[in-house]
Length: 274
Length: 341
Ligand SMILES: Nc1ncnc2c1ncn2[C@@H]1O[C@H](COP(=O)(O)OP(=O)(O)OP(=O)(O)O)[C@@H](O)[C@H]1O
Ligand SMILES: [Mg+2]
Image 1: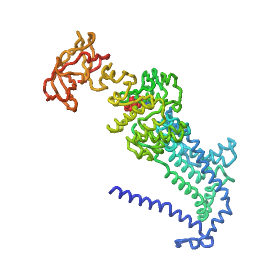
Image 2: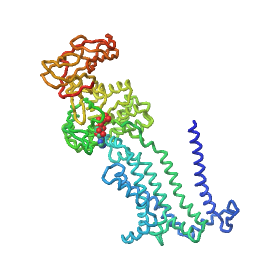
Image 3: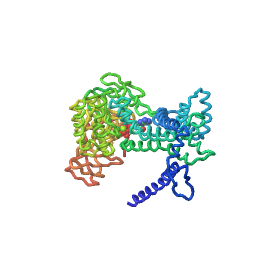
Image 4: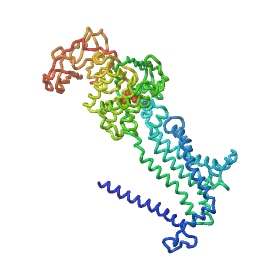
């Protein structure tokens, strides 16, 4: 009973912390984005004196936000899917096969994570030029895939290693086709890993700046490149708030969808002797 | 479906899990693989099912070499030691999985599955997920799932290990009855020697990756060839010594043996072949009343033997007891063996 008590208190404390951490900045962003240009929000007002959608209209009409949204909102899911598909074979090998140099390979594949994004971006841009890839969209997409592959490989390797040999064998033994084997033995165990990896790649891709900026300059825009343009020397908090909110919308939707999907997921493993 | 295994060897790196296994199972026979933990029983089943490619040797089913046939194309079904149930499928869906893959007509699947669930006492759990079941219930699901595909050969890997004694007896009888009715060939792995003796047409005793002895249960029990077999199955009394003129000298007295003179031999006899009164003598060190019979532990010198006498007798610790054996019942073993003091 005592323990239950403590965990309840902890849960409430964490909820409060998360609330202050996430909800307050979010609420601030919403208010900043709705400050009317004619009535600035300044000390000591607790709330903006007048709310309007004027800032939203300005940002929408004076920047290339519509194209940027299209770019960002399609880049993220496509990068997510491509990264997962490309990571799967490597993750399978790491999770289910034994081979020479596996331990080293597992470390090597993490190297992109320790390089600063701008370093990668600068050299990636020149690599693309020498490869003759001038099309901006696929170039940035490729950049995101390469950059976030380590996360996907890492997460999926763990998932693959949790698939039990015996369960795979059981499916085959009962006459299942490769597709049915995947559906019965692999997918239920991989599902949380697939969702987690997709979510991470999606979120990182949506807010990625370095590659999108360096590779895409000057004509290719994503939401973060617009956002950063408001955060430079001409710091425009109200417009930045508008763009930041647009940036976060798909993340929230995706979180809700995945949450729903994971809830319907069944327990992934079963206890047993052996 | 008949099964032949010829010189099958399996290596894991430098470790030889199976050295050279030979065994032949007739169509419709019920055979058990018996042996200590780690002797390679599961490995052998994995080879038969096709999950593991043997390093050497061949596997034939009905005379056809199937060494290169994939598991999904083999007419076998395995009841896994680890159960290996599909965690996201209900009990009913687990059992129906096999027939569904084999495109059995829908209404037949429904019938077959319900019947098996009934037989295994799982009907009230049919809609649960495996995680919601006890170990013994999961084990019965694994059993039902393997039987549902109605294969030519069923491979049982210790399928009753997690059931209580009463349920084990009941399910064991069900399995045997079903096997007689349907006529599948059964390869049945167990740790439990009583189960092996009770169920099988033939017992294969595995030790360190080879078949140490095979034969009908009675033959294995009464005519063990090596001290390992004698010791592993049932209780055995072993003596090592010199055989001269049809007798071996033991601390209990001269033991009559049917065997040629030899210097260093091991002989073996079962506790229940003894009769009270005879040339052998020792002191009772312990006795245990078992209802129908009485287990007596009798010592002389540095050796102890175990006797089984009718339950109507009574002995106290320290009593002298004399007993005799028919030389017929004393088996001369092939190896030199050892005696556990
Ligand atoms: N994949 C593997 N890699 C290395 N060694 C293995 C592998 N599988 C089995 N072994 C070894 O092979 C030997 C036989 O294993 P197996 O599982 O066949 O034993 P078993 O007779 O089924 O034992 P138990 O009665 O405990 O189930 C064991 O010593 C085991 O450690
Ligand atoms: Mg085993």
